[in-house]
Length: 262
Image (cartoon, rainbow, N blue to C red; front, top):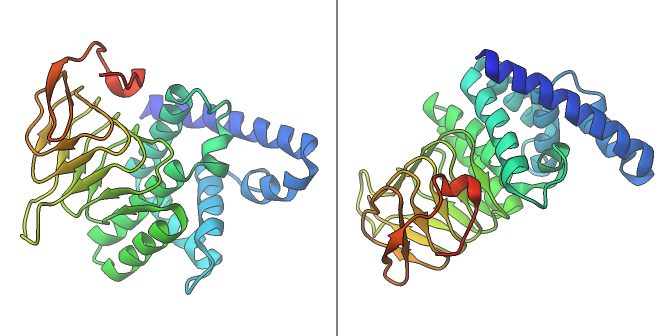
């Protein structure tokens, strides 16, 4: 937890400094960064304010959503740690991300996975309708549809994120990178455990479809556009329709290296 606290303090200092620079250099954005960052007391207060403002356009107000997000962040150290890990992952892995404030203000991948983390907590607390309401908002506003029961670790990067879908029994472990139009889906209308299990360090290329209760082993790589119907061994690259092994991964940690060549 000391390392997480250190990272949290570092991030908050960086985000605050970057917000002040934006306010000084971009007058049109001064009100945005003031409301989202400069008037806030912590990194998590900032994240709650920004996402609740993005989502609060329908039946539940931005103020009520802010209270829901703030309560979740205050009560759950795991969510806080995962938010820190997610922000560091995006900055580290995405060369287009040149500041720590960027995912908080603009990236729907970070905003949607954070929304899911709150929805997942609500789901596990028995508040399933509110959890599903957050899921529907995330789908409508961010184009990301993650069932509230799906389980995600920390250090997740949803790159671009558009049309990412994860079904109810999906599990994604720590330090996974997922590009746009990826589906973690079931095979039909069966009930029970029916969605993919993605181990740590995996890179899933754009448009890949992972179907059924399959396991993607540690540090595997899924080629863009692949349809994966079977388990994938650790440190293995698969590609094609249906996906087949094409060799061992050249990278020790594909999720971090982000090399999408198979």
